[in-house]
Each structure stands twice: as structure tokens, then as C-alpha cells.
Length: 123
Length: 288
Length: 220
Image (cartoon, rainbow over all chains, first blue to last red; front, side):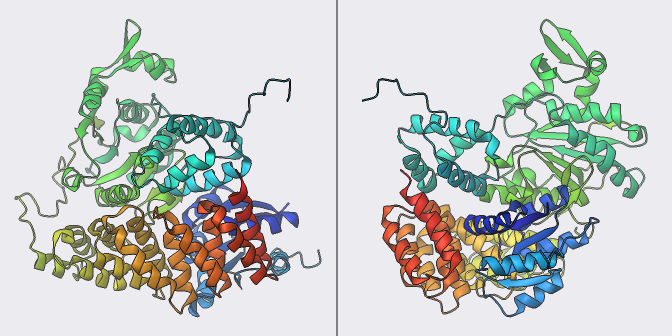
């Protein structure tokens, strides 16, 4: 079973993403900011990360940049954000994201991207 | 109507929605997180506080907790949620991490005759700094090549007196291996007196972490142990403490926090380091 | 070599890096501290940020340095100083940072404003600033304004959130407000939440979030 880490400071968003991913059969773990995410990602190997950009303490960019430096297997990361600055998408790829989605994410859209990232397109 | 006496409610009248809402709130404010398996423990503490405050329901209590300007109730609840018991070798995996991972790194990059300096705060009654001292003597072979200084601080002068005295209950030493017990303690009645050598190895000082005048002199440390203290601080005090630690550490210095608290509550000033035994935080090498 | 009794100040080895050396330090003047904030040496900037709090106009000086400061440790010291300073200049300066393109700066400003709004002496200065942020044309700034309310103990927080979900046209601003209503909402939020669901009838996220908030609000 694939293991996904959902990182967002809003509880509602985490529950929403968790619901969609669990419905599709993924196992979900949550973190509510970049530092907690980093701690969890160092503890457990994940197959996919779903990361918000604006978070307190350590934002999504900071988290990914730091994670990409760690000597561990690197999972793909989907970054999600509100409309935000035009530079966000570029910064997301620079920080090590594999794809970038705008909030609110629709269930079918999220699952399509998750499967793509996990190499399960035919599922 | 019913002839049956009401069954005691195992959830103390706190619904699972209440639990989730509380858990989220409490984590954001204190950095302490509870797994669902802790539900009973949490519900019980909440029920006690609902009763003591006379708020009657979870909803009434939560409103008090959320909107009380002084934050006093949150403090009381935090105290009741965190059982702060101190004893020798508590959370031993961190000492293991110190001798197996952290000290070897420090020894590799440190110049010849400089001592390795460890700051342990709060000292409480001394179990933690003395545990570190014993661990170094027993488990770190390179102790013969290095001078190590352990400084331990607390805000409370009466507890510092007790720490210097080094007299402990059986309960306090229950996890100390028998060989160490025989080597470093003398039993006096039903208490254990720590040896003079070990007592002399730790310097105890009084410090208020929120008072810059108290902490400005604390410099050149390689490792700071600060376990289960910051969870009791408000955000500003926590920030002040983090700044103080940053100033007190040498470049590349390490911070070890308690098991249930994570740096995510404090700051992004330090880098996360994963060692086989534990996760610790490190000041960057380039910093000064 | 072994365990040795150390000195707190770390001068046992004669290597103490006391900022002012062994002689008794003379307190720096406000002018020196202001200049220190612009020093090329990060350690000097950090000390200046911690010391300047007692000087007049510290807020403006700190905010202006914050906007260009790259060193995380100095930024942290500046933010702590602004929270300690706790005056209208600090509040206004931090609010200005919400419009920055720099994600880290934005998030730091939100966090500092939350702390000021939660307990600071100038908590009274926050609501008017919030009102203007909530009317900002940029939806992201409005989202950040809602984020700031997270730790506020002000009795009008629910009313402001309800106003957001009743009037704001942007889905993500409403979504952020609903998330906080899960925590602070009362019966007063029920009808507005139902109306919000009707307004964004084809948005699964709003349906989900409002449903959750309703469930929490209705729980007795």
C-alpha cells in the first residue's frame, strides 16, 4: 500500500486530502508544518508528498529544499497553493516539486496526479 | 423512564468530534500531540478540568480555553497533560545518541585542547546532568582523550540545592544498572547518595531563560539538553529561549529536546538531523 | 582528561566569546544600535536587534531591516524584538510584510502578528489593521488576514469570520475562514455556512469544509 504524507497547516484541508487519498486506497499520514513534515519524512519512507506552500515555521519550499538535501530515498512531491504570487510555481519546481496544483483541488484531479506521480496511470 | 442506572460514560461526555477539535487546538498551541490511542487519557484530564472550572460541558470549557486572555487555563491543562517525572536515565536513547553519534562528530572537528561543553537545562533535582556524566564515563571510550564540562541550570534555587546535594529515592534510581549503582552511589537508609566525584563533575547555576542578562554569559556550548521545558513556555518566551540557545551554541552545536516536543513549535533557526537513535537539531556550521 | 568542572560563561579555556570582552561593556547608544542593524557582520546585527527594543522608533528600523535581511538567525532576532516591542509601528510594519513576494517573510509576519494579536498590549491595534487587510484587493492578503485571527481571543472573531464567508467572493478566502470556524463557530455560524454551501454549490472542497464546520458547531 502506498504511503502519502499530507502537509498543510489547515486541519480541514488535511482531512479533505486524507479522505480522498484513503478512498483511493492510499495510507495517509499528516504533518502541519514543514518542520514536522521533515521529522516524519526522516522517520518513515513515503511514496508521495502532498505539500502546501504557506505554512508557519517552515513553509513548503523550505521543507522541500531541506528534504532534497537529506541522504534518503526521495519521493515525488505535489505542491498545492492558493493563487498566490506568480513566482510560486517556478519556485515550487526549483525547490524540488514534481507538480504544482491550485487550491481547492478537486478529488479526481488530485487522484489523477497522485497516480501519475506514483507510476500507476493504468490503475 | 429507564430502570437501569446510567452506565459510567467511558468518554466522559466528550465526543469524537470534540476530541479531534481539541487535539488540533492543543497541538497548535503547545506542540504536544496525542495519538487516538491516548483518547481515554486525554478525555479523563479534560473531564477533570471541566469539573474544576465549573464550565459543565466540553463546549463551555473549550470556549474558556480558546478565549481566555490570560491563557491560565491552558497552562493548567498543559501541566495536567504532561506528567513531568524525572529519574535517572529517563529517555535514555538520547544519551545513547550523544555518545554514539553526537560526541564523535564533535570530537572529529574540534581543535586539540578545547573542552567539550554540555549545557543541561532545567537541571531539576540533578538526575539528568548526572545521568549524562555517568553515561560519558561508562559509554564513551574517548572520555579519556577529552575534557568535558557539564553545566546545568535551573530557575529554582531550592531545587539547585537538592541537585548539588545528590540524594535520591529508590524510585529515582530504579533504571540505573546495578553495577553503576554500586560504583556511583552509596545507600543510606532507603535513599541513595551520589558519589562526591560525580557531584563535583557538574556545575550547577541559577538561570532564568527569559532574562537576557542571566543568559548573556552562556557561550561556547557544543550540546544543549533542554527536555520538557519549552512546552510550558508561551510563544514569546519560547522564541527568547531559542535565540538564547542559538547564541550559546558553537557553530555546528546540537540541541536535544524531550520526546514529545518538536522544534516545530519553536523556530526554523536550526537544521533537523536524523541519527540512528534520535532526531536532534543542529546550528549550521557556517553560522557564528 | 575526563569530566571537569566547567564555568557557565565558557571562559574556562580562556576562549569566551563575550560580545564586549572582559572589560565591563558600555551600553550601546540608540544611534549605535541603529547603525548596528545595518552592519555587515550578522552577529552585530543580531545583537543590535535584541538591544534596540528600548529605543524610540525601533519598530520602523526593525521592519525596514527585516524586509532585506537574509540571515535566518538575524530575522529570528528581529521578529522576537518586534513581538517584544509590541507597538502600533511594529503591527503596521508586520502587516505590510504580508504583501511581500517572499514566502518565508510572509509566514514569519503572520506568525508574529498572531502572537501580537493573541496577547500583546497592542492587541487593540490589530483589529483596525485586520479590517483593512480583509478589504485588500489581493485574495492572498485576505487569506493571511484570516490566518492572523487564528490565535485571537477577541470576542468578535466569529463575527468577522462570518462576514468573510457571507461576502468574500474568493473561494480560498472563504475556505480559510471556514477552517477557523470549525474551532470558534457557534450557532450563529449555521445559517451563513449553509448559505456558503449554496453559493459554491459545485465546489467539493467548500461542501466538505462547511459540512465539517456545521457538524462541529451543532455538536452539543
